[in-house]
Length: 383
Image (tube, rainbow, N blue to C red; front, side):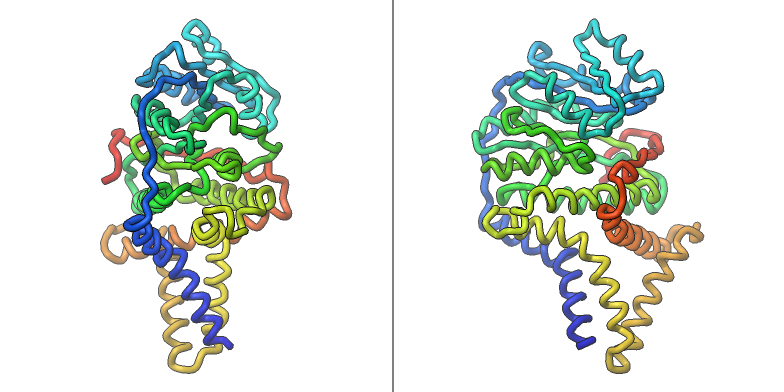
């Protein structure tokens, strides 16, 4: 039995991390589903939820007003979720340029988005967060996707600017891995979610978000998906963000992975094979939640394997976890530092996935933490 447990847990980890991406690569080679792209001007309501975003709001509004999109078709709505800094006053200064401020008592991002959607009158809703700068062509690229009547949601790409530390580089590597998976899922049919800082959807498909929703960028797109529409990834629509420290990324992952549990509770049909993205949701989203349990199963079963397999498995895991633990004290960059940094990032993300189960025991408000970022020296995309 320990051998079977160890083999099955290892096979599961390999499937989620490597087998499923390989499966995607093969499928997209034979079964790609292209869709029509054509720019047809449509009215768009831009919705920016913000809480205490004084540091970012000026640059964000400059970015929105700098979009390569007909200005007369844009409605710009900033929803202040009970901000206590100078955010509201700064937004009011933009009123002559057509920016609408919607003030609300602090109730969380979901209720702020609901307030924005109630005010919106555009055919397309464009959701974006306060911190990320937008590529001027990004909105036009997303709107092009809606020329195809089967498209309900179009998601852009979040580009992480160049960081300075090994852990920031490894988080960037993780984002590129995610981008690759999402682009293949899109080519096959639909992505099981969108990029929260840059996505658009048909207003007719949007539904009010339940209070306490953790992942609006999954809930709203899945409303469209389960209504029979596609969610596609448009890699040419870009938003730019600064690198985050590992601790901040850890807190964000706890919240977003807890949000996956929440989405499963809201849309149990995602676990049924008929929905069209079942294998992708199970392998990409639900599978991530189970990875730490598979790692625990391997660790526990390793003690009961026949020798010398038991010694080899335990020694390998000891080296891996020791590298992760010692990484913060390794200051000289080299092959060992590279391995230790990767190990530390991976273990951190696994711990986040395990702690995401706290969703069942905690108020969702406790899972929201401010993301701390460190401005990069230059706005260069990772290569």
